[in-house]
Length: 353
Image (cartoon, rainbow, N blue to C red; front, top):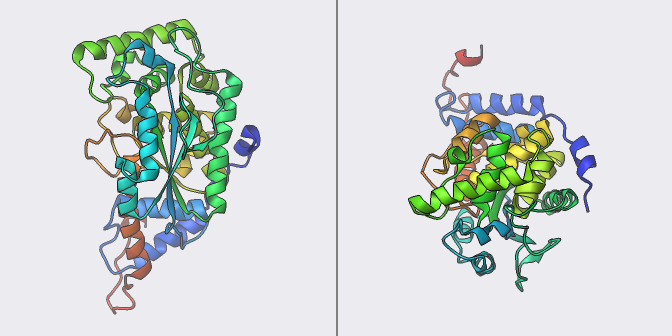
């Protein structure tokens, strides 16, 4: 398994020369300067990450980490834990929301069991145990389990790189993971759980208040150290969050851009950046989920999402929706004529003059 500490040491800065060359090509294209806005910015970032003015994102993969959470025992969800495995098995059948969107976007979906409560026949298994502990009664996992699950995510990023993928995305599936994400986020951002806890899949007002109080109880009991992201993760998080954290770290180490999804995915992104600040430059935001903590997380991470559609479906669906936009930008970059080719005077770039 890929070593956690060695991976962090391998994360360096993106290639500024590649970014500058990519920007020059964008400015040579016969269209208004910066006309595709944030799509151009994302494309330039991908060029810097891959270290080339001609980035290759033709092969894309959404890694969906599946895991169960002991906090479900506290009645913080509408559905039972069995739904995690049911949806996970829908991934290879191609009938889940994320699977259908990935197929349309021309991306591959890679589900990985990193902690589901049961075994399923067709999902790749990289789990240490069957679900986390109930965080109102003790820590979610041990520190060693957190590190080893992060390493599973790191290893997945490395494998996908070796398989020729140029762009990854971090997704998840696990009933109860908006509660674990809210607990982790509340501690990392020093906010009351009421500020960062949403309705998940659709809780009533009464159930939402109960969910917030359950999270407060878990934080009081476990008393995580906000300055130690691994302590926060191991005491309050989930195996899915840990594996996504590893995917971000692994992507950064092997120079692969990783697209973040919504609340749970951004919680993992914040953990990854707290562990290795240089990792931030390798994470691309996709959308502004309607979960209440998302805008706070994006602000702290210094990220501006492209899609504002009020989505909160999970699984990596926001990232999957972002893939075609990146493909369209790349198509313009590769194939559109330059000002010189159509014999038109090039625009002056007063923005960066």
